[in-house]
Image 1 (cartoon, rainbow, N blue to C red):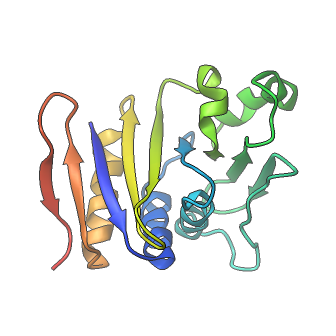
Image 2: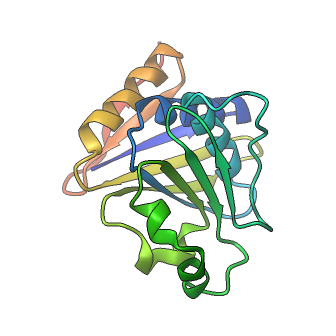
Length: 180
């Protein structure tokens, strides 16, 4: 199961991330997959907001440090795997403590660590549709679909955002209207 959502501005992308942060429970791993400039850091900024990360913490991509940590309702561990040479670099970081801990892990360029990712996670494929338009396809892996997907859809409806689609791997797309 999954959800497809389109955003039309960086602010909407942040709102989408905020919905995820509000619904997230401890131990969640979010694997972001998308080209440069697709909105991986913007959605992470929203996740941080939804987790209650204080506003004086500037959420930026940890391109040169590999990981940034932010306090909130749960700790947010923000990884940027763009510059890693391979999965061994994550072994050196002690990735298991993060991936299997109580915090929220967000991985930019997650495809670079595919074999190390936990079975229960959210895969988010991001596509650029236009200058500010993005498509997010969420793949929920494991038993977290129901509660978090419901939270995302409810929050988006409350924000009167455009639309989202509920996807089922075994059937055609089922249209879900989120906006008014």
